[in-house]
Image (cartoon, rainbow, N blue to C red; front, side):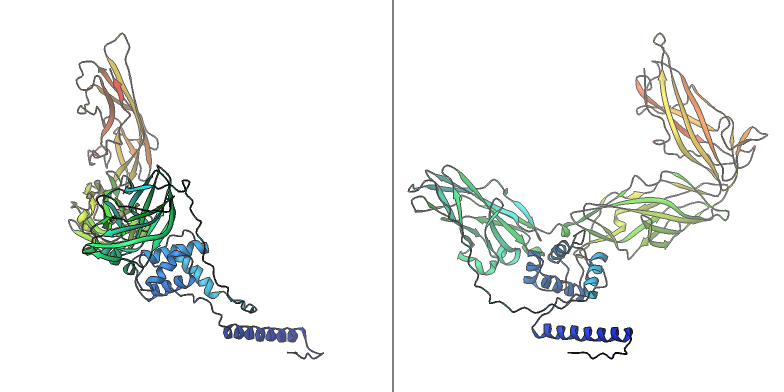
Length: 621
């Protein structure tokens, strides 16, 4: 095709004519490619995440695409089953195989944003037509030859025997979805000379292993596959009642003189096996079940005494479990200070630890029980996954509130931390109202990836430490605590000393702390009750405070005062039953404070966690 160009044409006109010509060429190339039968795999458009258990036409489209892409054995196995529209372990394996082949990481078999973006890029990318080549005449494939196994004792007759191999053990468990899992092993021994094993026959008591349990069986010598049977329903032979046999042949395995060879039968199980067929099966090696040829060219035979069993179980995903616990990061007993209207917003109450084993678990409902408070009231509960708000629900005192229709996934062998926060109303400046939240095992609803419900949750119920709701309070925070003990060798008494450093923040309003007697400390051991006898306490004016006319320390609203308290217990003698000869520590028992200078108003803080508000332990002797 010649494009005439006028001499007076502008550059823009020339460029437009060139573009038109290129478009015609591309169209002709595409028509030529279509005429020669060229086509590309249709890339599906999938708009949601897909995982094990998903169902629908988009799952079927993904399966068809994986089959046509044909990236390996998993895709080939999927092709045998076909596009069912159900996302099972076979689809997961084929997807992971595809992801690995095209460089999507992680190749987990989960269809999410990365895989969706990759397929979208394939669908959007223009294809460059290639110049058709003249097809070559296909050559007839040659059948590969198996190297001939040679004996080292030619002309010598051998004696072979067979027994069960030590591995796999008897009563081994195999699970739905397992691939190439050990089922049974046979040890073949040869005496007097070498022998080449050429056949192994197994007998089963019924046909279920061939029709309901296994997709294929294979025979291995170590890591070398010797033979494989994929069409099991057509391969077995009925020899007699309760004697259904399958034979591996077409291989040569050398057993050296006075040596042995372990042959292992491995099975690939169906992805889903009905409960009727999840049971224990018996397998045996019948008379003449092992055939070998010795150095004299004579066929030798052997059988195995007794039988072996194997148990077929649900897949690990179908056996998935979930356990509940209160996480160590859950807040200790503390104070939630409201605003000036008596409201607390999203005060942290409880951190749940949900752990899955054997498979992925989906949590759909979590029920939380609120406790009673005197003045303040629960008004809302919030459920967080990290910093992400998952759900919220209105709340009141002494009621059960349910976070429903959740899609919280706990991955296999992983722990998911979920935080429950609460809103309160009605807090007052004259009381500390106690509040707790409890999540019981029976209050959690969850399901496995196959859609079956988890009927019971392991672990223990989780109850928050008590949080105290108020409008005004000093909020304590421990900075450090240490203890030491000394005794002069010539004396029979010693001194236990310690230092506590902690902050008090005036929240919601001014607070006042007496310059003497504001704190109650104790010394204790793991085996003795706490005591205040002979315990001297001293502290001076802390930072960010003023001294009032009543000799109190005023901490203004929003300010933080740092207290350093020195302690000593003297004397400690051998008569100090329970303390002498033991490890002692010091702990903070109470903080007394006031809402107004010169008064006694202010609820004593006596609920601090003493496993935190304590010193190290020192030996007193």
